[in-house]
Length: 208
Image (cartoon, rainbow, N blue to C red; front, top):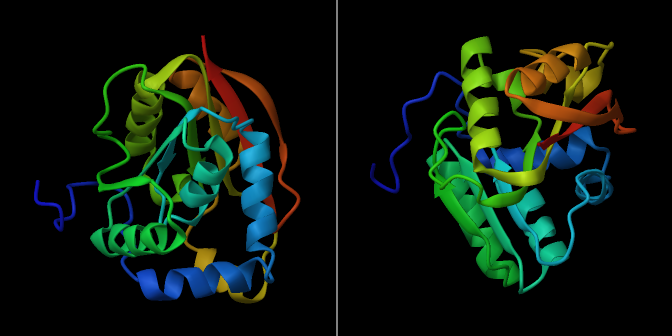
């Protein structure tokens, strides 16, 4: 696959990279950094960890994870959208962050088995049809090390207003459905709950 070519995927492909960061800032009411820090804390990312961000968008969360893992760690990000990856690479270069960004589909991860301590899946499961989501969960399990953690974060089905409703009305994921997805991939749920912003909820699971 050429570096600038989108892979085959049944998930929703978002290519509006320039608008993506502006929208993220607006829908978090300027609290995007707080949200990133919260997700990294929920995933228990530590110095030296190998971290994969699946559906990384423009790379903001992956770059934040790199700051946490430090020079002795590893952070990779994948997204099926070439414009998103191109912007993520520019942002990483500007920040001096050594993050590897690749164009790839969530259901076909280009990494060996047992590679990562942590996998992040944030605000992307609602873009995947059921079967594709199941394949993505199986791939996440495959690339996780034994004892590795996956954090899945997505929008719940509560009432949404304004910009959040406009940009995310195409889909939400019930917490029980995220739990079923990770358990179906033979991952053990450790904890679930509310993130504390914009009706986001999370599941933290691990590979036995």
